[in-house]
Image 1 (cartoon, rainbow, N blue to C red):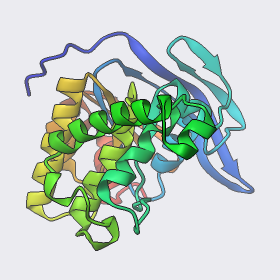
Image 2: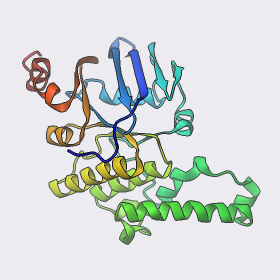
Image 3: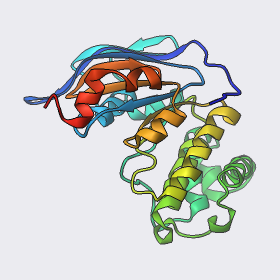
Length: 262
């Protein structure tokens, strides 16, 4: 797969992350990095700790051990709004949209951190607030065009089929102009055509916007086609890390997916 943007230096690094809930160990000493402009896949069987790792990266979970370095700043934990402000956006395994709001309004919520106008101006929608919202709306319209969802821009998202809702959620994340985009099973529940569309958009986001992407995905064909590098988790531990071809040949990975080691 040819990539128009070369992979750069390390953007995010996780070191020795350990996370537990009571007696349940979700992650145990996990370390890996994500480089600028790459597509980094995190894979593993159900319960391997993949979503927990994304939740640690963007501040939903706070690890008991280890640290994360993002854009050169090392931290042990961060709140979700701080992660968003620093350039980390997220989609979820279960769609988290405002079902009664239109596609346009849902994507506009992704611009909230970018809005700077005085609250009173926003309330009256006049002066600087009106000018600012016009600029943000123009940016959102660009995303709507990019994702080819012009025909549903005014449709309440609760009325949309599942695949289009996933695309709207991607649009809302892109509206925040993230440097690092975390995608939690972006193709779960999709048919073949919907998966092909989502793969194309993920590649386009990476190439045209220059966005670094970390994704969780169970479809191994998608992982092998999209990813620059893959990290494999099993029972909360890292068992492999490398290029798709390298990881696919690792016996530990084969055993984990076939259930041999269990």
